[in-house]
Image (cartoon, rainbow over all chains, first blue to last red; front, side, top):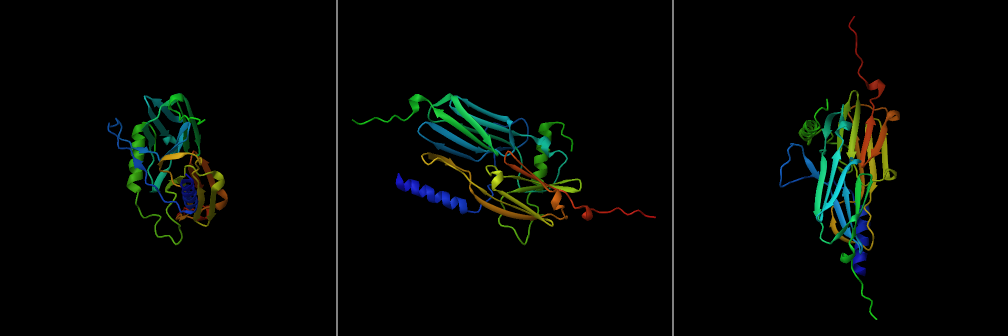
Amino acid sequence: MRTDRATRKMEDTMAKSRALEVQEKKELASKEETTVPAKYYVPNTDIYETDDALTVVMEIPGVEKKNLAVHVENDVLRVEGRIDFSKYEGLEPVYTEYNVGNFVRAFNLSSKIDQDKVGAQLDDGVLTLTLKKAKQAMLRRIPIS
Amino acid sequence: MVFADPFETLFNFQQTLDALRASSWLESMPSGGGPYPPLNVFRKGDDFVIITEIPGVKASDLDIKVRGNAIRIAGIKTVDYSDKASRHRRERMAGSFDRTVTIPVEIDPEQVKAQFRDGILVLYLPRAERDKPKSIKVV
């Protein structure tokens, strides 16, 4: 456990001094086809688990709160964020390095989630979802007498 | 551009963006420390607009400088975790960035405006008045 934490510390320190590289946006490879030919993208996501909750962190730059939909249904978490294209009105592209599109991503949740206790927060294009585990899925520590 | 049908617009816009990708417009610069953040450059009348996606970067960690026709965008992106958490998936990257780009027109540094919202940085770069082409009347 201790070595694990030490490694993690080192990783984090390294990450801070490292120069960032461009992560090519991943286009959504969906099983079903959409009715419109526009492209959808898969947001970069971090997922981590603590004793009582699962936290999902997604990068969805350009998505406003009102254009964001988060659903948990049948143990599937689905996030869809839409871009407001009217902001690009009157702009003529002359040089581009990335494409712009709506974001979609879904995850199957393995541990039982309390569907009524999902917290969502959007800051600087990063969506943080806190999914509280249901009581029966929580880790129980047995005291040893 | 008229934005009548949002789906049609989105498709056309994405096609235009893709067609322009990998053009050599901003290449072979004397300065430039890596390609992050990815930039889209637009023209709006005489002026230029640079848009970039930097989700997770705080406005206080951003450093933007303008001089002549060069724009420098530097900053740090941090990704924080609780120490006790076990990680399932890690796709977001953390680190520092520093990028300088040159615009083919002279810009008015006093009039440059920066807007940062929802992880998107927008820089409005108005063309300097003295750099604007003058129309000459034939007498």
